[in-house]
Image (tube, rainbow, N blue to C red; front, top):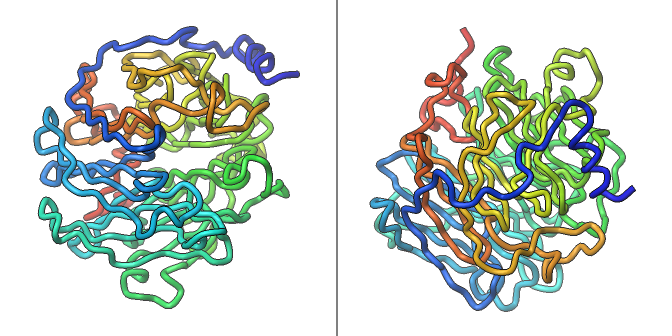
Length: 447
């Protein structure tokens, strides 16, 4: 049975229904800024990260493909007049094989601010073992103060880090969780890394819990692809949600040196190439994306697995798609809203107030070229009609609700979404937990 037929059946079975049969374009979204950020290659812009403090109005965009392998820093002091203030490119970019700058995250430690830019290079050129480079960006907007402070290398798993997640642990430590090309993810203590720890701060690994193939035609999509990490407000556990190949795995990393598997989401009809995952502030609802054409975003009730009623979750409770002909890439949850970078359909926002029936509430199409829709499993290529284009990354500044998007081809966008003026969990009756970290205080202790 083809995936398209399977997903058509999924949409009408199990009480789930697609909230959107076709794209909703340019609704309830105001464009504040657009920076084309042109390059010699059509696909140049990857993930995006925005700092959360209004006093530090900076966003970071990863750049791939020579000669633009690296990252750009964007000043959003005036969101209506965003401007690039700094560009960093890896040395001898033309000699490097592979993509270049992929995911980026910032963190604050001991009063200083740092950017981590992940990289992916292949054997045959320099830096095949390079996972990420860490920069001190405390002195912004004075770009002369930006300096490299160290490089994280993983020689045992060449190919770099496709995705990373920076997390303020309940112990007070700043952790960096990374994907690798192997059957595990890595966990780094960034204070140890900055102190030039001989192990580069590596304190633990997230194991791959099943005997799944690691080397497939989909390369880095074969193991862990992405992570979300947050504290469970009820139990106080630090939980890691890993998206990888055949499903999603939830670990207790309260002791990051020895992650413990809690439950998983596997065996779901049509779930393949699990890509991105996030969880509601109470940790009971998960949103998962996959990496192939025609695949909707799925919503899962994790409670039966977390409580031990079932060994694993094997069915979604809701599905959503901006356009069934395409696919989404990344998302950010600010409960009950989910902000999605949906390739050809651009920025999409849906409401999860009823997780069984997500509703589109805002959208803007950032892509203005041919509607390439995504990765067709019958033709796994990045180029051509089955290739990638459009909105790649998305992030949200909680303080004022500023939404930023990086588009593969059209560059950087800053948006104001109607009636969304910022996010604090208290306003919505939930814990103040999202991907945005409280670097000064960390997770709130459980009473």
